[in-house]
Structures are given as structure tokens and as C-alpha cells.
Length: 112
Image (cartoon, rainbow, N blue to C red; front, side, top):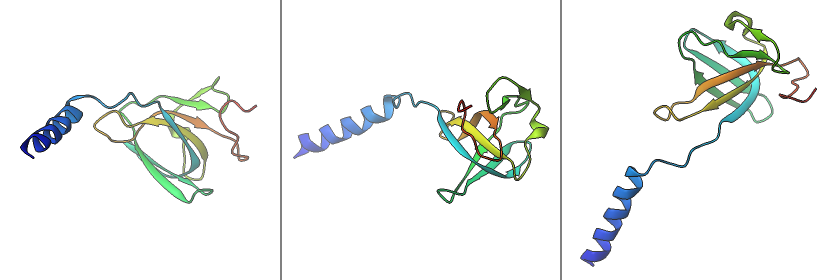
């Protein structure tokens, strides 16, 4: 019985030491509800889900839907359709890597 407890404890300790599998970046599409200096909140009307994303200082990864044109962060406003590419590698917090400004038809990235 002690051996089973020790094995379970060793497995738990090992799981904490080994980094999780490298997570691929995820994409979330929706309408901007809130934008501030350090975060953005996006609502997806299809899934009725709202997610908040942290923004690093001097965030400058804002692109057109086709990814060819860059924009300043001031172009991201409430009511705008966006696609946010994000990950959760930094302490488990969602943070935006790139923001794509979409058309009102909510065209997805690369669908033109």
C-alpha cells in the first residue's frame, strides 16, 4: 500500500516538473467589447462566449484580414470584428500575439 502511495506521489511530482506539451496558438473570432492599454475583451456571438486577452506594452501586432497591412492599436475599437491569435504560455494567462481586423462579414483570416 505504501508503494502505491509513493508511486502516485512520484508521478504527481514528475507531472509538475515536466512542462506541458507546447500548445499551439489558438484563434478566437468575435466583436470587440472593450479595449484598454493592457487588455482587450472579445465576444463571439455564435458561441455566446467572451474572452479577455492581455496585451503587452507597446503591442503592435494589428493586421488587416489578409495580413498584408499593419495598423496601429488605435484602429481596434469596440464593435469591430477581430480575430485574435493568442496563447497561454505566460503563467497561464491568455495574451494576444496578433490581432486581425476583419470585415463586417466576419471573414476569417486568409479567406479572401
